[in-house]
Image 1 (tube, one colour):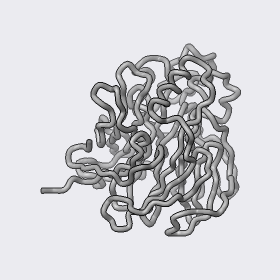
Image 2 (tube, helix red, strand yellow):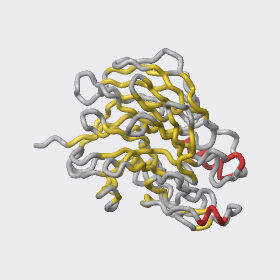
Image 3 (cartoon, one colour):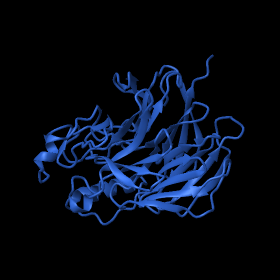
Image 4 (tube, helix red, strand yellow):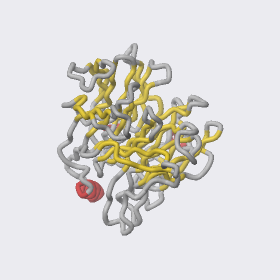
Length: 371
């Protein structure tokens, strides 16, 4: 259900677990389709998580492809569909810079040659850098405004370093990849699972949404939206929301002392994944701010998320409570999930696109028709 003044239609249906979206300059939309591939659960917590994901059809044989959608006649429904890339490794993030299309596979970033207007890529890719797979497997990508760098979100392997911190090295962070040299560095760390990445245009600041740790109750700690400071450390796994120590974790007092407080709380376990900037005037009744796709909780007494929300900004900062853009994904009795929003993006015509990986739909939100 769309908010007052808005309407929603299915831009594309019949996809297989669509997770992330990329809008190309000609208006084509690429959709990453991939599934979680769990290992053997190591705890009751892990078993519960995998069981819940199986019920949500979020576990299985991964399509490992990117599909291209084209609305050639401009009616708001994609009538052209082609397999843009296939035989990938749990693809998620995508970016186009010039004639190169970048894919964030779970095990690294791959570059493919791209020709404007092409509906598929058959040329082999070139691997730019590697990441450790497993755990939080999504690898979001965002180009720098000058097109010289890519930023990539890499989540933790576990909830709170359950298997030791050695296997978490190089994870729970955002990387900066220099495309000319191929050098990568950790731009910010202590971010349990940073997924969506977006630029705030007035300040040029990088922002992300982060899924925080489990097992401390319904509301503790909140998932969050935050500006990302270069070299910043955000607490995981030692502490959360600044210096609030997680007593379940062997401590590092020096790390706790430098942990930054995130900017904006989004509620516990909302699984806020998608993130994009909404310019003022894009949707009626909504000014400028961030749009967030909330995938929804699985481990709360009362479920949360399962919606697309808007956080208003003013002077480069959040400036008010979140507002619903799209709801109705969860049955009132919470027994059935009709859909789960993930990636969000602004189409070339100004529509808001939302990937729904349970409904297997890409939704399109626009202004309601005036009577």
